[in-house]
Image (tube, rainbow over all chains, first blue to last red; front, side, top):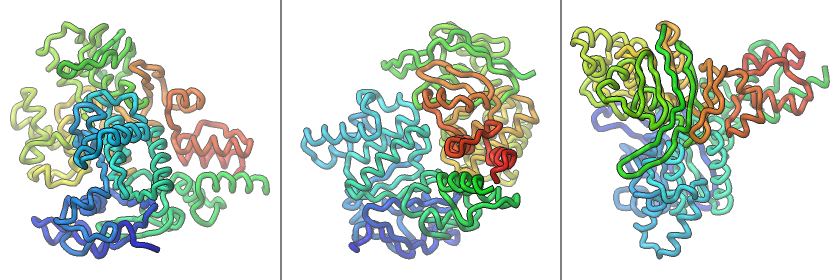
Length: 275
Length: 287
């Protein structure tokens, strides 16, 4: 297999003002081209710090990060940001343009892209997030969810190899969230886009290829959604697992390990036939 | 009795500088039951935040009027009278922690009551009480708000609104960005405040779990209009209607419908939590 898209080794971070308190300690993981990796964990587990480090907004105290094989540092971070796009939680902090389409075009203008190509990419990105109808509007007048979709379009227009989402879906209604997840899945397959998604949404995590669980700044668990959610943890788990555990606690017979919602429904139907 | 909020034929336009977005609220009439927890849901851009804003005079109706207690807000209402209204109607904005500004948590929380003319000693008392209501320890009163975690900051910001002892509290996406456990904690605290003080809560959310578990009533908005305003459970009965409004189902209800479709067994109640679902499955003898 070729080089990993993200290669994080021994990543450690503490603020200079409080060196004893490590926000992240010795975090190591890889993400491959075309893979969707979800990072989950409670508030304060170090998730957002990890995202900020990955994009070079913070400097690690120790350890290293390689993106597409390039070590991330002060000199390379601008090069790397051409390949990696990031969308944050609060969209209000991310607007520059006077209209939605200007805002989406902003990143492309910085790349000295020909005008026609730019127009094509802006239209395509707005289409992908379902914001075509709003292209001439002032971003500050949009609703929270529309702002968030515009911010995501701005990053998609750059055709990044790597997309880092830091709770980027929180302002979206569930339907737009599902639509966007479908769009990203498509890009993942078609363009081999790598997605690193920091999320509290367990359904979103369950839909990804692999899950990384952060606890108090360390990697507590890593694996497919099925393995991670089966194990006993204090972690929030998908609904089907919560129901399975509740039935188990009440002495009812249940499947032995984590089942997806449709598997658990099948199981319940079958067990009903047998009784 | 808690304060009643009544909207009669309220139409409102949203204006920033020279730009105008017409009819963000389009002929809305409703009465908020005092002392209830009501969730406002609907797709992005449906007018949810605008509904909150007309309830405390941040957005003035262009037509119709809003009655808050004995006060009326219409297109001719003066700014001075809005201040007394805002003392009674607390507003918690999206990501309220971005508005913390004081040097200490104590000063930040006391700012509201001081601003409404309370004396220093009383304001400090209120700050301590509010801090306790959001489940934080008094030891953080002297800390800088910026040294706190995201979840703590959110609670301090909410305490700042509670400290003014409002009759009604309006919250715009109060749990956005919190993890599921943090979400539950915050809503439990708000519910406790509601239970103890008997006051009204109106909150905007996208989260159907929060709606199913914490709200008593629901307002569904679509294109600036209110299309549903009733109790929670009946809302989740009519799945076809929900789809039309682009609303999701709570997880338990989604599971229930999936199960009913595949097994052909109809569960006796609309289930909104895993506990209710388990009880229903046991009742029909499936587990």
